[in-house]
Every structure is written in structure tokens, then in C-alpha cells.
Image (cartoon, rainbow, N blue to C red):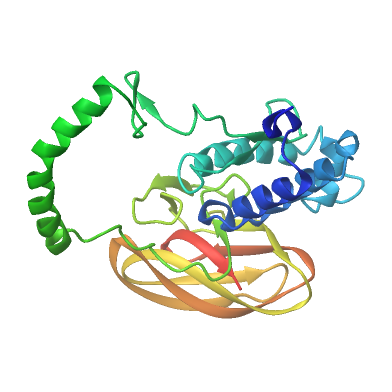
Length: 300
């Protein structure tokens, strides 16, 4: 029996989980991290049979013990998001992962699978995009191709090193737990809508915040390990000057006079806010005037 036949070991599973949780794609969603960590640890411990929608909602997503999954679909919605993000992370940051995590549709029990050798080399139009060892004709073709391409490559490399800017840097450093304004767990009230934004962290922003009490964006799932003061960074878009109000739970609002020089690239402001242990709501609004567009918030 081969190693592949035995399936990943517990250590391999935990390593695969750690890789996903540390990825840039997952570091921006505390809920997805908690969801994935919870179901994976249950599976690794041999307790996958205990998993249920209600239990995940209570123990992973912070819902009260008496909540009804029939009335609150947060687990089902986050499971859809989790499947999408797992596919995204394995198609980008972790494309070469030896062990992958899957969440089958209609189930909450994760699967740990070894990446097959055939999956390691992406295929386009039936032709492998990864180099493979060859013999006979393949070796002769490689020698001919090398003779032709060698001179071209040598000259081109020098030009590339001088002219290529290299991979673009991240839009901003990851410092805290990020909550995207356009994500499903956010509340977009009144006329507030999602809109595409290439420079924004999640590829989108929300617009039409402010002018009346009804137009606000709220983050009802901001989690804190303990009660205390935290730094809140708001990433916004603005060309000119506008005011944004911040309310945490039922506390008094903070008024933030903001400035910006473009609607194409987010600016940011950092303030101190009090959070209680567990779930918190942060609301951004302006009841009297139009507010900036909102990209995301960070808690750290």
C-alpha cells in the first residue's frame, strides 16, 4: 500500500490547514478562518460525525445557543463562500500544495486529498504547461529548441532585468483582521450598493453611504478575543472632503472629517475603538451629508 492509499496523516492535515489560514486570501475573513479551523479540527480529531449546521453556527460563528438555522442561514452562506475561497487559494497562492482541503457541496465535513501528479501540471488545449522529462524525439527536439532559443533568451534576459518592474506589491500590508464592506456578512442599508473597484482589497467597494439615516454600511460580525480598546483602520475612497461617522455597538459616534484625492485608489484613517469580547457591530454612516465610499475595515 502506497502513502497515497493511506491518505494524509493528521500532521499533514494540520499543515494544510495552517497553510490556508496563513494565506492572504483567508487572512481577510475572520469568519471563514473560524469556520474552516473548526470543521477541520473536528475531522482531524475523528469527530466529524458531530458536525451540524447549528453546532457550526454556535461554536464557530458565534451565534447564540438558541438560534435557528431555518431563520438564520449564515452557516450555509459562509459554506458557499468557503468553497469559493478554497478554490481560489489553490488556484493561486497554494497551487503547488501537496495536500488540499475540500468542502463538498451539501456537506460540512471537509476532505483532505493529496494533489494528483496529473493535477500538478495545468493543461491548456490538451498541452501540459509544465516541462516534463522526455526521451528519444523529445530529447532531440529539446536540443534543437535550446540551440535556437539560447541566443534569444540571453539577450532578452538582460533587457527584462532592466525593464521589468517585477510582480506588483500588495495594495497594502496586512496588519489586522479585515472585513470587506462588500462581503455577504456586511449590512448594506438603504441605497448603499456594491460596485467594482480594481484598486480595492476585495475588488469592490460600497457606494451611496450617507445623506440620510437609512444609508449606512454595518459590519455586524467583528470579533474580539477580549474586551478592550482596538485600532480600527477604515479604507475609503474620496476626492475632496467628506465626513464619516463611526458607531461601535450602542456607543456614542465618532465623527471623522476625511480627505482624499481620487476615487480610484483607497485612502485610510485609523482610530481607537472599544470592543467587547465576542461579536461587535461597527456602523459607518452620515445622517446629514454624503459620506466617502468604503472599501473595508481592519481591526488590530
